[in-house]
Length: 59
Image 1 (tube, rainbow, N blue to C red):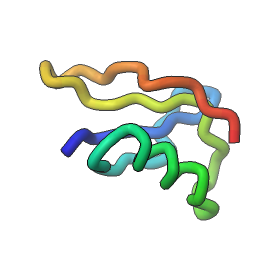
Image 2: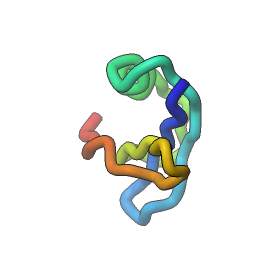
Image 3: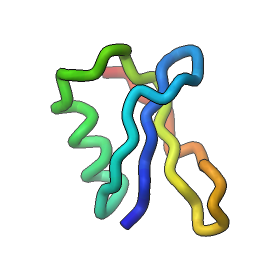
């Protein structure tokens, strides 16, 4: 299962979770209201162990 991390405007990790797919990760983010900082960027852990850009987020 892919691991996603959600970053704020400064690039600090706000949350990190595992999701079955990208759509599920984005749905979770839209519905999550307990985060301390607003998320601006989403990354996922690639097969080589490196974090890869999964998209910008405006919520």
